[in-house]
Amino acid sequence: MGVGEAESVASYTWSRARIADTWDEAAALIEANHAETGALPKDAFKPAKDGYLKLEEQGIATAFVMRRTSGELAGYAVLFLINHLHYPSVLMAYQDALFVRAEDRGPQVAEFLRYQDEELLSMGAQAVIRHVKPHRDYSLLLAGLGYQKHETSYLRVFAHGS
Image (cartoon, rainbow, N blue to C red; front, side, top):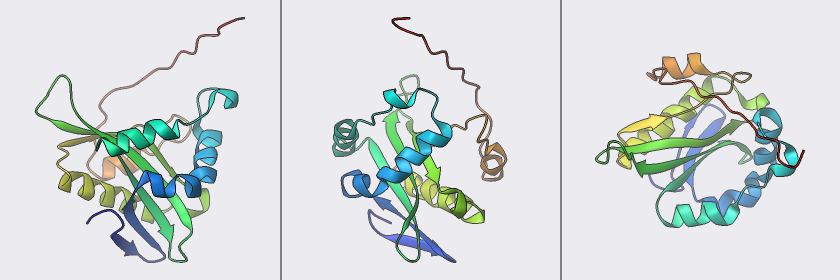
């Protein structure tokens, strides 16, 4: 499948999408994602649209969308495809963002992730790294899709100017 070619299950469809074409439409979901999972203060949250567009033009950033059959955007994912610096022959997909509206979560999210994995594989990815937040932990879903726990990350935020 290519950009814009959709697959579907029940009341949802998913497809690859161009960031340039969906950024404005996804703005409310991007904000909702930060409100639900953001680790840094709201005033620091300013997604760099130009940076994402440059990465997309370079073939690094790729986006996926999940839509209700009505066409309304229900979720999105952005992943970066780069050769791993420790394993340069391995093209890795790193999840930057994944968000599905609360009312659209359910078994279709697993299908959305499966679709992404199939597309990433067709794009040459040899592995995918996804992350979960402790308060929005979907590890069991990932394990059911064949993912293995790889590492645990910690965040420390430094207060500047205080």
